[in-house]
Length: 311
Ligand SMILES: C[S@@+](CC[C@H](N)C(=O)[O-])C[C@H]1O[C@@H](n2cnc3c(N)ncnc32)[C@H](O)[C@@H]1O
Image 1 (spheres, rainbow, N blue to C red):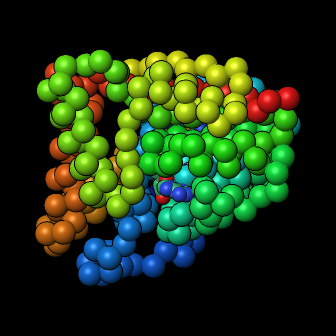
Image 2: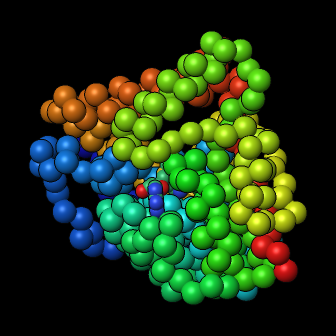
């Protein structure tokens, strides 16, 4: 056990292969929160504090696919709205070489995103700031793409998409990775999915709803976007995604150590706080209905949808 810990520690401090050099050791400025302080944090601040890497379905594989659909290359500047802890923003900056600006209302997520960019050596390309979707702190016509990953479904789509459109250059893209539920499904399944939505609203304190693929199309078009395309995808666990995550973290053992740390922190806070235990319980129940329960999850998936600002 001790030998394994020393091995892991030495690997995280002295990465050997180039694959393991993704994340550099940067002194953390993270504050430690007492249980009471942790309970008072907003849901996404708390999850960022625990170290959750990302939330969207399809992971980094989908992030790359969505960037391709939006024709992102190294000359482009993109805005990731609701970027969370910047895991996919840093990944795109590193893999594609594009300039990425990430904004989020959760302050701790933005702190973690900035630290991640430093650790991955992409601070010059990936910048982060606290900001609100509905009043983006950028001039009109700034970006080649605005991307959301599991964010637009927490938003008033009409207001948000209009604001995305404002900051886009003519001809530029909105690209979204968001969950859908099929329309015209049996009443019982629809009721259970509505229950899951309520659970997410309760734990995050944010509005939350799944649109159907047809509704996502209409919602993008209503904001004036053209050439809207909606691709339906189903959640699946790919070995490639685990490899992507491990590589982005700096190597397999660092990733394994990260997972163990995350689980231990979740167990610790669950044991020490009834309020946090309740949050995890509701989260588990909501995820089960949307992603695992056969009678409901068969009607649920995620869309990779794109639209272009009128030229
Ligand atoms: C489910 S998380 C997704 C985070 C990230 N995109 C990912 O895939 O990991 C939703 C994020 O949207 C952010 N958010 C919610 N409402 C927002 C708003 N009005 N403006 C900016 N960010 C917002 C939350 O703070 C949270 O980080």
